[in-house]
Image 1 (cartoon, rainbow, N blue to C red):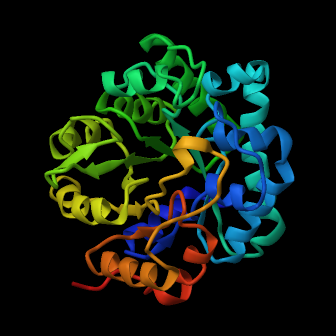
Image 2: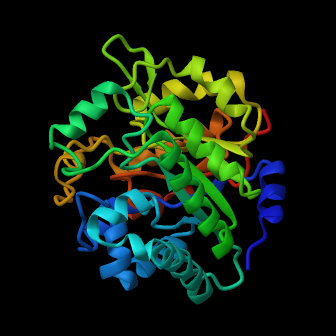
Length: 328
């Protein structure tokens, strides 16, 4: 059993912590079915042992932190599949699969289980353009809009279930608007567990950093209010490499604690279909090693990957990255 205080001590000692890579797209490559309503969470129902094997593979690749397959397992994602009454069961299963993988192959090395909570599938609090996109049927067809109050309840409910199931920390992985990110971080912090708050960003046509997929919110101006919610670590995640690199110095102006980066491979297919498993990134595993070395040189302590950056990208990092931040 890992102890977060031990992980915090390692962060305080400026150690480099390795987070796992993609969960959903890795499950795609392992031939678990994706679902337009609940994406990778559907595998908790149909392919639980594939999910466990995914965690085992990442542990054997040398990571320190594994992430539960709950990014898209909120009640609002499971109800359209007729799985609403199994919401708690499937989230508990996700935690237990990660814990079982840790018990099976971690040996004496401490492995920490991070519970993922996200706004995936929520229209409440979304930007008007995104709501119109969803309602058009292009994405998540048939999705009914939840109220703001129900959205907050769903996020808090999932955070509490994961906390009670025994995760070591929570990842607040909001990809949408500033408002959705606020709800997600707030729900996670309310459990009393350590929280790693995720910030998705993008570079617009004028090379300006914006929040989420489509939001017009300025990235930097949204940071301080969210940091005031009390996360233990901040991360930039599910953003392409260029946006992640651009966001790092901006975040460092506002946050002096540990920073993690786990970008995505800038896939162009997964949002549209959730079936194809093609990764069309130009960043190859060795290039990713070089990129992450530069981030570590800039003070990043936690390195991992998101959609498209899978185990072949993570495996080389254990030996390629230094064990601690440079003294400078």
